[in-house]
Length: 330
Image 1 (cartoon, rainbow, N blue to C red):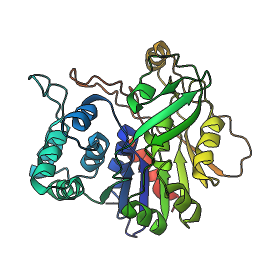
Image 2: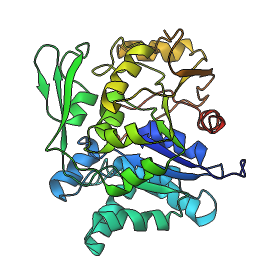
Image 3: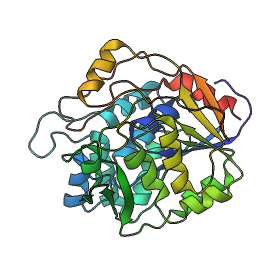
Image 4: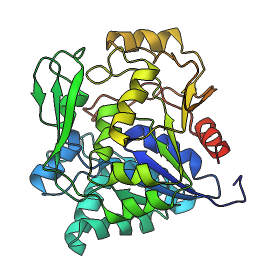
C-alpha cells in the first residue's frame, strides 16, 4: 500500500478499461467505487439476458475481479471468476463468474443482492455499483440514417465502421441506481474511462440523473483518453473529438484529461491498422482543462481465450502507471 490518506475515488465505465484502472487504484489507501454500464448485449451477456432474464454481468464481473483480494485462496477465486469455458454444449464461451452470479441471483431472488454477496466472496477493496437496474438497450443512429439497436452491433459493426454516430439513446429510458448518484455526489475524484467511448462510457451518462449529478459534484472530473481509435465508434477521432463528445453528454467541462505520451510498437500498429484503428492523435494545445501527458502503455500484450467470441484490445494502459497518475491528481 502506498498512500496513507483516504479520499473517495469513483471510476465510471465498464469493460477492460475500468478493470485496468481499478486494479491499479486498489493498491492505494482510498475508498474506491466503480459505476458500471448495464447495457451490454454481446457474447455471454446476450445469453444471460435471453435465457435467464438477467441484466448483463460481464462488466460487473470484471470490476469485481479487479478489486478482489489476490492472495491465498481468494486469489484462486479471482482466477476462477475470469475462467471462460472452451468446451461443453450450452456453456462454451461462458465465464464461471457470470454463471456464479446467475446461480446466486436465483438463490437470493435478487440480482442486486447477488452482486453484493459476490463482492464479499471475493473480498473486494471497494464497491461495484450497477449504474441502473433498468433492462435497457443502446440505440445508435449514424450519419447515413442507419440505426443500430444493440450495443454489440455498435461495438463490432457489420455496417460501414467509418460512419460517425449522430445520436445515441437508451431504450427504454434508464433510471439511475441511487447508490451511483450518491457515490458521484461524495467523490473527491471521478475517473471516466479508459474505455470504448460509445459502448463503455456514454451508456452510463445516458442514464437519467447521472449527467446532472456530475454537473453538481464538487469532485475533480478526470477523463483518461483512449490509446486507440475504435472502428465503428470513433474512427479517425482525435483527442479533442473524444473530449467534445464526452462533454456533450456530461453537460460540463472536464477538469483534467490524462493522455499517453509513450510510443507504440510497429507490430501493434500493424495489427490495429488491419482493423482500421490507429493511435489517438494528441491535438491539444492551450485548453480550458489541464492536460497530463505521461507514458501509460502496458508492456504486456493481451491474448484472449479461444472461446471468447468478442473483439478485445491488444494493448492496454498499464495499471500501476495509470493509478499513480490518477492519485497524484488528488
